[in-house]
Length: 407
Image 1 (cartoon, rainbow, N blue to C red):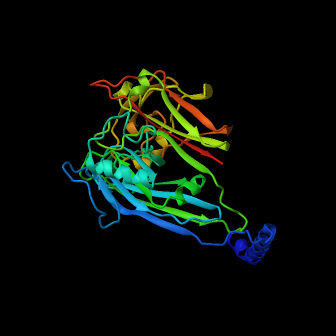
Image 2: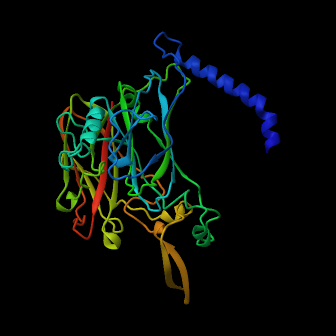
Image 3: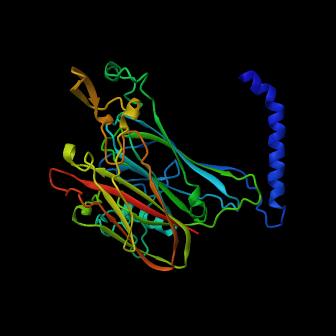
């Protein structure tokens, strides 16, 4: 097959050149065509540590890596600027992660604020004392405060990297795993947010991992922008609005536990009519131990202006596919009967089905096509009718986020 490919290479090149010429010709060569700026990449973090060191004072100035360290080290916040490009760009966020000694699965997120909202978040994180769930930016917009725009949500695997070559991990490696992975990698497409990402004078990109160890995790992240080769392929003027984000982004902030008491109502206003509107929705259930919302199926309902958009039960039953990323996952013997034979196998915690997440994987958003929306006031409701209450012994909560995109 390689020999055939080599023989066909000149022909393929000729065809490629012809297609490219035809593409440029189809643009018409008008003066309104967008000039080429080239591809662009920004390294956010390169093997940087996120950990938890009690008593650590938040950085008041940029540290050596060009970012701020907040929440005792569990948050890194970096101001960047992405170039405005009149051409459409494929924008990708690439993230790699490995444990530096934390053996547990932990919630994580990459998020962003634009301009003044980012500076406000930084100031409040440095000052502390802003823990009220109903006011902390991260729930709904209030005054000048905006919810964090979630770029990528993930759950760390159990101990990947640091423990992958430990004697215990090798002794307990199942036959189905050829070798423990050294790291985990996620990639997500941010192209729909090109206008929002590039029109901020300062884009404040943050990463948060809910670690409670001083070893923590080692993370690398990069944003890549690849512009279209067609001069007439112009960037769409799409708007992006973060409607809500209940993820706990600070030690003093309380998790959002109110779904057990009723829907979360989010009012928003559109200054003009919105065309080709889409809604991205993220949700993950946590806490409560074996019988809690992490391990029980909980129906969700999304309602826009009184009309039901979607009823579904967010649930992941494919977590066993990520076993190679979880060398420190706890396990126990499980006995069952198959065709009259009594069989025994070891079941890992990382294999268990969960409320829309798996240890070692990114969380996949639900995207809904809303069509056209009229200008004016609207209301989005999120209901989890059977969500279990938070108590002193069962810590049930849901991390949800919603983003609106339109032209």
